[in-house]
Length: 91
Image (cartoon, rainbow, N blue to C red; front, side, top):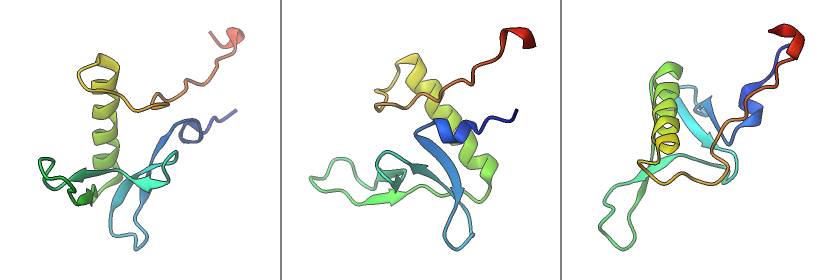
């Protein structure tokens, strides 16, 4: 049985609308992950993060997971991907 792990997580790597790159979609906020252009201003512009390859976007997201898990940066709610349950007979 194949388990769709992306269906069980808040974040998913997807192709851009024009298929020119890849972004990370936050399914809870239904928006692309972004960073402020100048975090010191009162109302910074949010710049969407985009990668040329799916692997690049996945690597970034995995780095975020490691930082959130370690507690080095504050993690968003419901960030943690759910681990698929494995049958005890499959061990």
